[in-house]
Image (cartoon, rainbow, N blue to C red; front, side, top):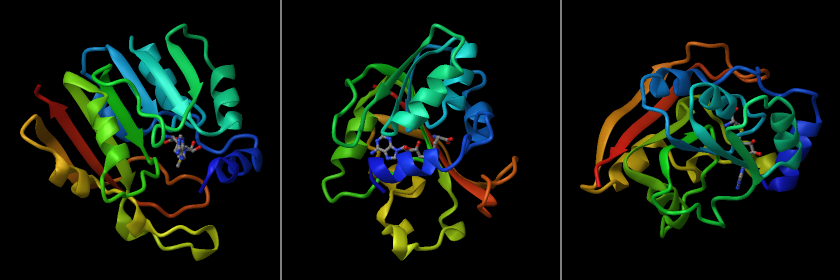
Length: 198
Ligand SMILES: C[S@@+](CC[C@H](N)C(=O)[O-])C[C@H]1O[C@@H](n2cnc3c(N)ncnc32)[C@H](O)[C@@H]1O
């Protein structure tokens, strides 16, 4: 699932996602004091735009030019920086964000956890990591696309890797409150919300 895969996915339809922010983001970020946010794999931009409308200054990154173009075209705020970037190969700046939001982003497991650690490092002391995936029980391997859900971090894996600098506020699987993305049958989300203490 490289840049070409994602770009072709977006080009296959004029709009892939609903246009609404993810329910997990809205549920968990409502009430957080706005600051600087990193939206990892921002897609068509609904989460970044919701955060911006709620006072956040957002860096929204994606590997797909098509998705970013679509997202930027919807932007009537002056609070989002849209950037083509792969945070798994180019680490975001350390300690720079009060919220790092990772919503349904395919973060591949690595023995050294380098990319994951870079995302954790990007959270400022006092800041929040919000990581949501589809419930692994809803996901099946798709060998034709080289996709095996076991290759990707789940919230539980991340919770286990957090050290004493962190407190886990939520690590749970919950029913989706919105319809599944078109063409899928996802019914539940796995959600990790953790706060960096220092
Ligand atoms: C399942 S979509 C989720 C999009 C958005 N977060 C949402 O929930 O609507 C995953 C997104 O991650 C992006 N992506 C995948 N691998 C990436 C990578 N290595 N670096 C940056 N973006 C990536 C894809 O282009 C896609 O937009």
